[in-house]
Length: 616
Image (cartoon, rainbow, N blue to C red; front, top):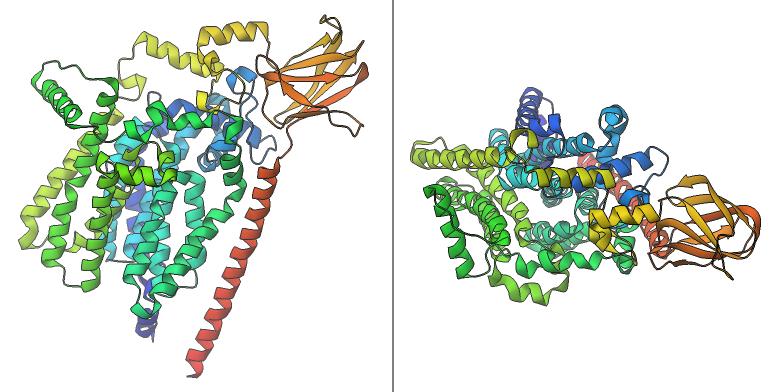
């Protein structure tokens, strides 16, 4: 009876059963957890890499988010203490999942981690650990457990995953998609095998991917849909593909509470700057042209030979991404050859072909050869950096490694296995080199660079793309910002008479919460009040107990300003939810109810099927 059950429900047998395979499953999980902790121990000790591209940003946001979260702001959007206390709307636009994970650790380490380095680093470590586990569950659904362990190990140490995203870039948000993409593919496999959890599983895991990095999630979406289309039985092909697409759309709708403000409120800040200059995909191909490729080649040769060849800053960055991309890509034809040579199962051979195509397409879209498609599909520009598609390349290599795994020790493939060992050794070398360059304790750091880091920590200045309009991002210069603070002390208020422009009373802060400020006003005449906090479209004022709303406008310096009547009263200045926030939350709640309905319907349908099978 047990054998028949396993044949009827192979999806659960391969992925979820603990009976008879508990020891093996626990052992494999422990090995993956140990491997993940081993390769991220510097982050566990020192926190998010100080010298990484995004480390400062994630430490700052982790601190701001966690502080407000534990003060009762369950979804911090307006960070009241960034930009030296003038505030900023980063939480409206940046995906919050990694910040939620960081916030969980805040009560434990806040006393010794006042600037958020450790909690931001812990979120990275958790992502790395979970990514190995989810990759293992996904790969175990298509191959043997031992081979799945191999594929998951490859997934964890792949140089773009570890050397680039963990260390060189400190890209915490991007790291979390490595956790959710395998679960989406696992759900796709479940859909093919008629699992009742496939649709809700795909919706939830894809929704979490969107909450981690929405643009990468959008690029990934065609892969599970195409997988279901390619591997469904012909008579169910259209229906199954439509169900998978609907599940992904439900996952997007679950995140409407985040997505609608992030998309519809961009004119309230300088978010559009993210796709110009350095963030313009047209400047970020793996290589721009043959001249740049030759320049990078001369630079690499010079480093090896001990000579010096000049290299532009942009090209210098690309050398690293190009090296990591081709180091990963090297494994694809080797693994594919092993599978085509030795694998007899038709479905696994097709799987290898599928992920081989994904790998090739990933490379294609990282190069200028795909420029026409990027121009034809406008939303693609929001990815900013085509090298991010290495995430899909890593997924493909992990799948190919898992399928090829059972054959690598056979006599016919021993030389190929040795070649792959050399490739993996190269990966580990890249991982070590990159990790050694992003912590000041391991690397000589220029005094100017060290001072710049201290200044960012001191001022908590946000990236210019996250500044609210019409504040002047030129204040990102530390000297200019210090002068601005000296003349406009943050979180204070000034009163000037409308008729004379002279001081006409006092305004004292009674209560200050991120989106709700209460001032005790004593105005001797009608006045103009300036609150030294950045203006953001939507701030409004009202006198406590009154119905009428006072119009808020930006001062010439981009601060909150409004006209108030004379008298003694409490003045409330607040940033209520706008239409995008309100509509987004409603859509998310409706989608959550729909998800619950899908789960209930699946359970009821499963029960009817089981009863029919027993009575047959």
